[in-house]
Image (tube, rainbow, N blue to C red; front, side, top):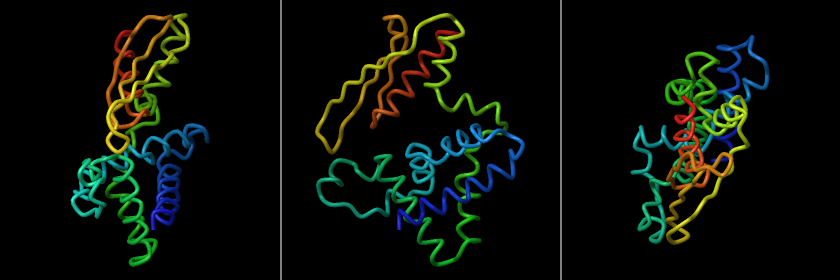
Length: 183
C-alpha cells in the first residue's frame, strides 16, 4: 500500500505543481515537489490527522514512541493514500492530497527557497564569500529511538545546531539557525 500511495502522491503533487506554477522551470517544480513529498512534511500531515494513534506497532517500536517517528508516520500516510486510491479511485485520492498535502505548498515559487534551509545556508555563505557549510552529526540513544544533534560550521566557525529524530531533520534545523547569522 505504501508503494502505491507513494506513486499516487507523486502524480497528484506533480499535477498540482504544474497547474499552479506551470511557467516555472522544471528544476524548481522538482524542488517544490520535494518540499511537500518527504518524510518530514508527510509526518506533519499524519500528525495533523492523528494517524499515529491508529498505527499498529510491535511492542518494541510502540515502547519507543514509534507512532511519532517521521519515517513511520510518512509511510503510514502513503499507505493510507494507497488504500483511498484503491477504494475510492483517482478522484478521492486527488482530493485527499489536495486537502491534506497541498496546503504545504509555498504561496509563491519564490518562497520555495525558505523551505530548504541547507540550500539557503549554502547560498548565503557563498554570497558572503564564505566557505561551504560542513555538518557534524552525533547520534545518541538506542537504535529504535535515536536522537540526532547536528552542528553546522562555515570556515570552521560553529553557526548553528539542531536536534531531530533523523539526521536530515537535525541538519535542516542547524542550517535554519545558521541562516539567521547572515541576516
